[in-house]
Every structure is written in structure tokens, then in C-alpha cells.
Length: 129
Length: 129
Length: 129
Image 1 (cartoon, rainbow over the protein chains, first blue to last red):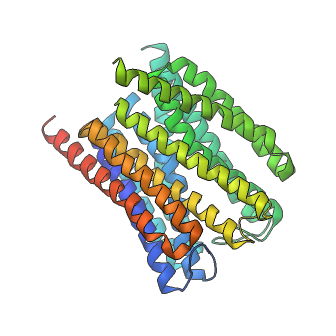
Image 2 (tube, helix red, strand yellow; image 1 turned 60 degrees about the horizontal axis):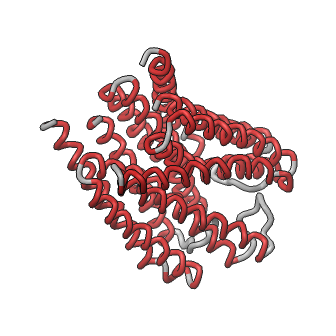
């Protein structure tokens, strides 16, 4: 399980970094909490972090169950694509929200593979334990 | 653990489907990212997905620890009530936000049972391993 | 794993309590769903719950992997600091958003320790299984 665990921690650290960038953007663009709107660029940082939270909640069960029921090394490599895809998404969205599709696909497709593989592995395990 | 794993994956897929419905509602009601307000019906889809995210974060640890410390088959059946409850919640909220209570209760009660059972099982395991 | 499991469940229950306080604040300050803005005090409750969701998503993998690869008892004690830190954060933020730093640090530092320790333990396990 160690390789998958390392990639899970990398994905969580990446997500926390996005959170700190939102905090920095609060200061830089003058958007004081609890507000989450008020400056277009701040809102982009905020949406990147929110969307990363939204995908992380699907990614972590996906990679864990793929590692458990299929293969922990493959889980780690597929998970790394997600981590890199999120960097592409971040850079694209902050530059121009219309450019977020590539990074989004690069991070959502590994989630589908992990969930699909995990589901296959769990069903196989149910019938042939 | 396989039955609980299958239900976890079903719950995550359901949540991703709600996410895609939000994306489709963005186009249909003309609410461009990073905005999350601007059209009442879009906001309903968005709140359903956000609320599902909020419950999923409690559901996944709940079903996992119930499966680990109590019983993986019961965990799966209780978890299925959550998955169905979320569909009822989605249909109710999009039709009329005032009608969201039934689906909300049907998805929050299984979470309480899973967390309560998991807590009982973990405490029992602490004293009588 | 039982001590870490108990603290995970406590953290999830704390988070659900914050969610119910948001629901109560909806009624008290007249902010009807799907809206999430409209009254300053309501927005504070809402941001506390959202921020707790955001940290919980990092906390749960952190404590789980620290418990698995380092030590489940230490994981539980470090995790308890997070649970208490969130109470301090909640009380500070609702009283005055400018006073949220202490509770924020008290809940984010344990997450760093858990993730850092978990990463160290997983890498050690990769090379010396």
C-alpha cells in the first residue's frame, strides 16, 4: 500500500498549497473573509481550490480501493496523472477560466479509471474471494 | 470489505454524476465559471452537489469504520440507504428547495447509524481487542 | 487502529455539528437555501463549516496513513489537537473573523504533522518493508 499512500499524501499536500494560494489571493485582491466573491482573479483561485476539494473526495476512495482490490503500484502511477493534471488545471484556470478543460480531463480521467478498476476488483473479490 | 467498497464507489459515482449535472446546468442557465450564482435553478443543482460533497465526507469514514469494526455486509446495506436517499434529495431539491427534507433525512440518518456503530465498534475493540 | 478510528469519528461528528449550526443559523438570520450569503453572522457559520470540510479532507487521510505507517496511538493524540483546534477556530471566527488565526493554526499544524509523518512512514515502508 506504500506507493499509493505516498501519492495520496502528495495529492493532499497539493490541495493544501492551493488553499494557501487562496489565502494569499485574499490579501492581494482585498477579499476579506467570510466573503468569497468581489474580485475576478480571487474567484478563480477560490474555484480551483473548491474544484480540487470536489475531485479529491472522489480521488482518495478511488485510489485506496484500486490499491486494495487491484494493484497498489498501478494505483500510484494512475494517481500521479491526477496530481499532475491538477497543476495543469490550476495554471489554465487562473490564466483564463475558458482554458480549464485540458487540466480538468487530465485529473478526472484517472479518477474514472481508479473508480472503475476498484469497482471491478471489489466485485471480483465478492464472488471469488 | 468488498460489499462496503462497492457501495462506497456507487456513492462516489453518484456524487460525480451530480457534478456533471452542475456543469450541464452552467450551460443551460448561462452561469459561467467562476460564478456560482445568477440563476435560481442553477443554484439548486449547485447546492445539491455541494451538500452531497458535505455528506460524502462524513459517509465514507462512517461506512469504512463500521465495515472494519462492526460488519462489512451491514455497512453495505445501510450505505445503500444513503445512496438512494441522495437521489430522493436531488429530485426534491431541484423541484422545490422546500421539499428537500425527506431525502436529507434518508441520507443523514444512515450516516448517524454508521458513525454511531463505528464508534461503538472501535471503543469495544480498544478495550477487548 | 481503534484509537485513531475513534478520533476520526469525533472529528466527523464535530463537523456534522457545525453543519447543524449552519442550518439553525439559516432560520435565525433568515437566509433561505440555496442562498449562502445575505447576513454577515450566517456567512461566518457557513465559512466555519466550509473551512472545516476543507481541513477534514486533509485530516482523514493524514491521520489514517500516520496510524497505518507510524503509530495509531500517536495518530490519535495528534488528531485530538485538531479536534480541539476546530472548536477554538469556530468560537473565534463567529465572534470576529479577524480572530480566526489561533484556532486555524491549532488545527492545521496537526494536519502537517500527520501528513509529514505519514509520508515519512510510507517512504520508509517502501524501501524497508
